[in-house]
Amino acid sequence: MPRRITHHRLTVDDHIMIAHSLDDPFFGPAQRLHGATLHVQATFERLQLDPHGVVMDIGAAAELLSAVLDPLRHRNLDDHPAFVGTASTTERIIAHIADQLAEALPSDHGLHALEVAAEENPQARADVRIEL
Image (cartoon, rainbow, N blue to C red; front, side, top):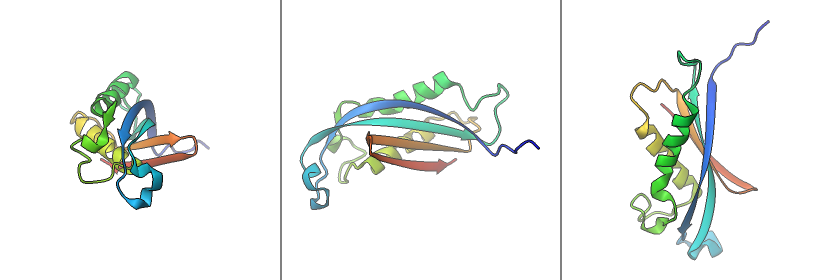
């Protein structure tokens, strides 16, 4: 008996190199200005494939992610308007990326949800999901 597919997903990835400080004793040595390279994955989800048989065009998904990441690349996030007055933790960075991706989608996207994940090092990852 064939299994019922409940959703389809497409994931593209990119990376950003940033600088930031996390100005709270909670963060220990990360209170000081330091650099980080985040490997970012964006996953787009549909309940049914589009008329072309895809979640979305892979090239379009990669370009969309790159365009959203460009304002963060090689920046000190302490000075970025989205993070002024708040700690630019990996969790807040990916929430910002997810919000920007959702805003940049065309109105007829047909997606059900999107997820953004970031790996700060091989042992540490965070992710967020937005229902669209």
